[in-house]
Image (tube, rainbow, N blue to C red; front, side, top):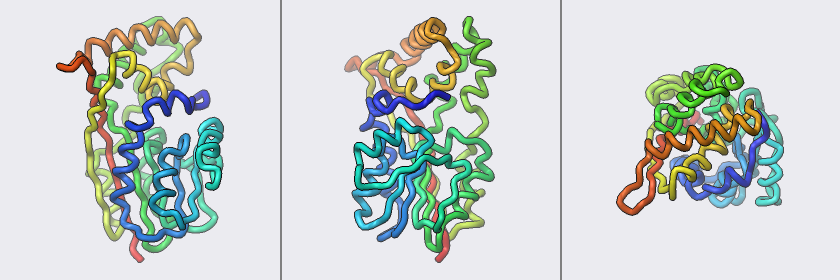
Length: 260
């Protein structure tokens, strides 16, 4: 995919940071020495870790050069480096591996999460949050529009672009990590974000879930796709009594602690 757009991603920073804070609140560590923020993006989640653990060595990792540049501007005293969570290995075992809204982009979770958990030092914690919204209208309609228009050939299989089949059920993550961990906490929450209109919902997902659909398209195809998609979003998310739209956004949380 093309590189990420930090400005577009940060347009809804408060909404994107709320689940990151909820995840960090459940991390059962008092004074970690070394923490990694996988998929740190523009540093909004890294800032939360630094605020809670000011004495820790914290390293933000991301595949996007643009996101890392934004994170360095935001948090110049912290370390940031380019790395892929699918293959990354630390030089020394960390106390905390924190992955907020990144692992949903990667396949083979039945191998990925145990691998990450195994990188922790004794008593370390793996904390993961992932959007679980592929069945929501916002994402179902992406696949529907992708399959129906003149852009279909350029996009290819909508299921592949839409990342269908990558995530497990919450119980699946529990069963995966429980035999390895001293304690596993798994939960699923649906946030309902207030959006001004259908265009705002499209802007939100344009920075994330829509990217695999839009990246293969030329300018004309992209404009046509977005117009068709926004029309469907307009119908799927009607105004509430105050005129706002509510974007339902389910997310899965996992906090697994290694034995000491």
